[in-house]
Image (tube, rainbow, N blue to C red; front, side, top):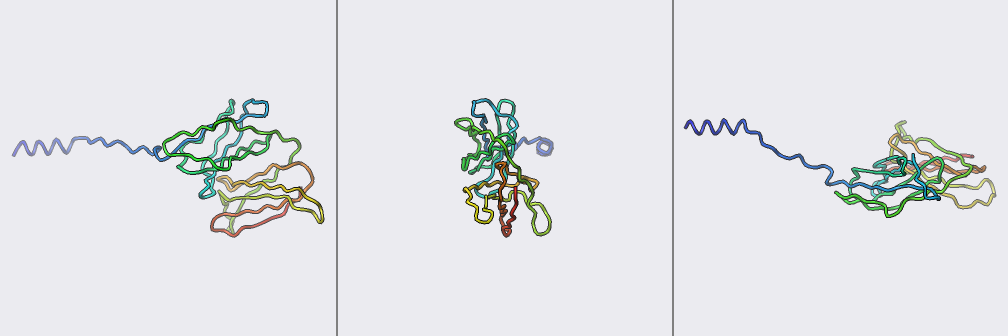
Length: 194
């Protein structure tokens, strides 16, 4: 009987080690580099991963001095990846797949083209109660002034975690229509002149 009590006592003080589940197993990483047309690295480029399934911003990074970026801890799925820098035209990879537990490297550097004279249209998307809406899709398109012949020009972006967006456009006089949409909300439009 004493040995049974001693055994129970030993079992009650034994430390059972259960390894913690690795949360990174169900996530992947996207890495790559950004360069200019002279094949030089471009630093300070914002890189945003937007889920193709939900149209929401999932992760954001900034390129380092070597033009490298890393978007770790991405849930498995397909993403649009947007590259933005004030000195360059925005670039977008429309769809890239990230697999759980794997690192996806871009096969070649993303090459950005410089912009000349430009205008910035920025703002934020709010819901009907005045709350900011992160992850909203914002489309900007050139519209004619009266009977003006207008070349087709359309860009889209996703609001950041603060509900903000920004577009860089040619620095010529023009009229643009902004349209914001998000899951569960009616789309809204606004016209602006540059």
